[in-house]
Amino acid sequence: MASSPCGGGNLDCGLEIQTRSVEQTLIPLVSQITTLINHKDKLKKTEKTLRAIQRVGQAVSVAVGRFVAVGEAIAAENEDLKDEMGLACFEARRAGTAIAQLTDVSSLEQCEGDGRSTVFSDRTGMVKAARMLLSSVTKVLVLADCIVIKQIISSRNKVLVTLEQLERVSTFQEFVQIFSQFGNEMVEFAHLTGDRQNDLKDEKKRARMAAARAVLEKCTMMLLTASKTCLRHPDCESARINKEAVFQRMRLALEQVIEIVTDTRSGGEAKALPVSIYAGIKDFKVKVEGLRDSLYCVSCEAVAAQLEALMEKTEDFTDSAYTSHEQREIIIQLCQITRQETKQLINTWRHAQSLKAKEATDEMELSILKTGQSVSDLRRELHRVAVGRATELLKLHSDHLVLQALKASGGDGNLEAVADYAGTLTEHKEQLVETCRLLCHISGTEPLEITCIHAEETFRVIGPQIISAAQTLALHPTSKIAKENLDVFCEAWESQLCDMAILVKEINDVFEGRRGDKKTYLSLPRPGEQTTIAKLGLELCLLTSDVDSEVERWDEQDHEMVRLCQIISSMAYSMYLFTRILILSETEKLSDVCQQLQVCAKTPVQGKSAIFQKVMQYNSYRLFLYISKWSR
Image (tube, rainbow, N blue to C red; front, side, top):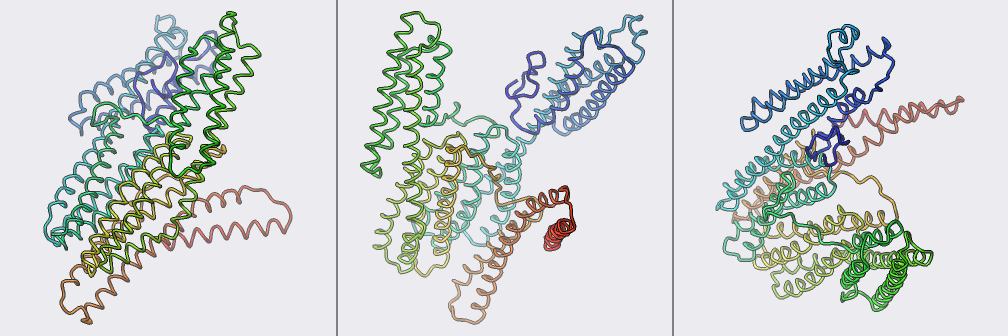
């Protein structure tokens, strides 16, 4: 069983487990069954041993009974899984009963006299019962997991239906009504996919899920403002383009989520990640160093071809217009050194083969070390170039001058200036896209590669969307909705730059051997009160913008009531944002304070001064927790 705790040939239940929850559920059962199976045949049959074996067997039987009862209840509520689940539950109950009988050794002598089998006399029967139990229990868990997948698919389908309705609306009133429903459905979908993301065992799938959920979260606000802009200016082509791009991106993200949870792709075959330079170097070094164990495991030609494929990928660095002449020369020189060392290795390798050597010669061992060092030096230089460029770009764009200029030009109705700054933004976008591609080459792990690809795609998409939003504002410079729309897309660009800075740090951590705890990605809806806050915030934002759109229709813009409505609406949303940020920041401190409180309580101290200091520290932690609880 792939990645299963049931490992071991005899207990292989033949089902692939993809989630942590299923795996963790099986571990105690595997432990108990292993205890029964691995008992020594000549184990002394003391009263204590007999009672222990019987207790384990009874515990397994009782646990299986309770487990099967839940499985049967699930089967009753899900008609399409009823037969499969029923059969798996039946097999699990039968296997649990068999284990209970085999471990019923309270009167062992009588059992042996009656010819009845026990765990001592029928080890083959115990293994068979254990295998059936693990297989059936795993099948029940996997079938139950299918229901979770069905819930995610059903939630996605509801979101898609509402998304299509939003795309066709023609009035503000209809849009507000449908978007409110859409917000609730997105909250439910975010809950389900967030739980699934954290439950997935495969790191690559978790990274892909995080990327898709990030798109959906950011696009929800974009969809709101882009749709409102289209409704306010129905004949504006740039507004229509802007809106359609958002809807298309959301559909792609929804499809990606389903591909991940169902482990399928709409195109049929799974799409493999492009091989990065880091992965190529890692594989190349494994093959070269593997020659120490066997001189005949791979061919000289295969190693030479793999090296050339690796050298070809470095052209992404050397062919870049943004790579300095000095950097280009260093990379080319390191590639030449790697070729030379590999060529020398192949020569010594062929010589050793001609001598029919059984292991690497001293000369060959030296070549293996030099080849490994040369590719490591190449990787280090490529890392320095990619991270250095990313750092420079992040520093260059930290002031967001181009975005500010686009906003100002659009607000002035200056289409010519918008076109000029759009060209500058396009150039920045291309630089960032290429830099993300280089970071992908040296990222060090497949999840980080996926994050780099997500960042590259985000810059590629949001750049043109900002330009179309700026064009719309330039055509309608007095439109508050068009201005709000441009602000939202600019914020998304700024947010992605922040994400890129975090990504660069994580890549550096991997390169330097530091794999710190990476915070779990949580989308807008969060458990407990934060979910309520998020939902209310989304609705409040919608109502606030709706007020603004209605106010634009009033002829007397200077009317006192208009001014007061706008002030109250703006203040309400600002208060929500401030409160949300404050609560989130305080909540993030709770886990650390709880841990500190536990450490403080357990740490032994001596002396009056130390005791007094501990009591004060302990009380300060408790006071913080009390205040946090009261404030929530």
